[in-house]
Length: 84
Image 1 (spheres, helix red, strand yellow):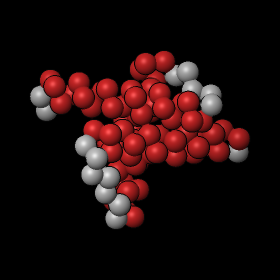
Image 2: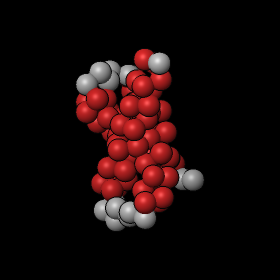
Image 3: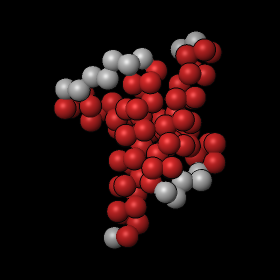
Image 4: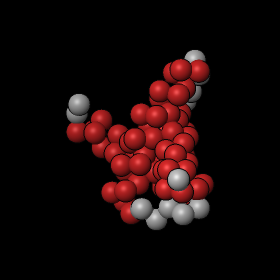
């Protein structure tokens, strides 16, 4: 992976994690936390959309949308298991 690819990957993760924190109202994970949540969310979102046969062919915006939805799912799961 090139330096530019890695930088885009980290930016997409940070934006997706930040957006998921805003959507879930309780974010404030910091930059590193947003990046980690966004990257894990991208994995979850990619898996879920692939499973459903949905392709967001919108370039980097589609990647951010997919990662954000995956990050929201991740945060929902974390909240669920914290309560149990």
